[in-house]
Image (tube, rainbow, N blue to C red; front, top):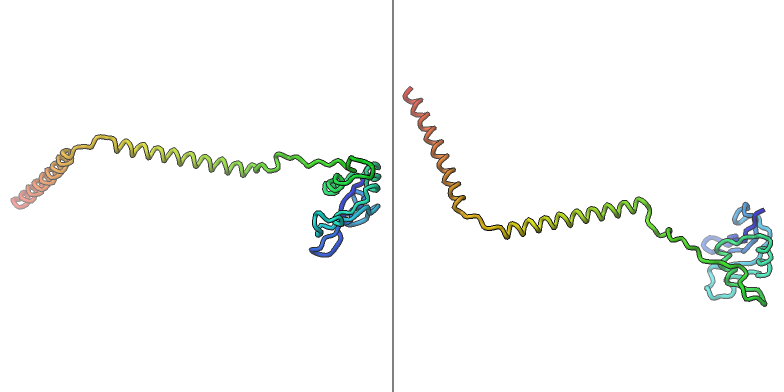
Length: 174
């Protein structure tokens, strides 16, 4: 039988109160237990002596028999010592999970996509600056070719008008 030293919830709604019990690990949280070894009232201030009351001798006895405390109870027991001893009843260490705060795969993909878009935007901005710089530094084109283009356009228009007048004269003579 796997034994656990755990908290069993009591109290009414929004007013929690816990019993520290030794129970079979397969039993329900608030259900059957083997022995009650203390209480925990989370509503009291943290420095209050009545917040956590655990019979350390019974807890140590159950741990020797093979009962394993849950994380919360282990934290309570690590702060307690038996009379005449310097070591805590149970040696508890804070868990270390360096991957817990790491983003998931989808979030990593979104971050990569965002970085790619930002890089593309910066490249486009640099190209636009470079094109503007080249246009600014390029020698100014002379206006004469523009005048020549206008003259050529006028010449084409007059040629078309002449062709139309010739066509109309031919129609009159025919």
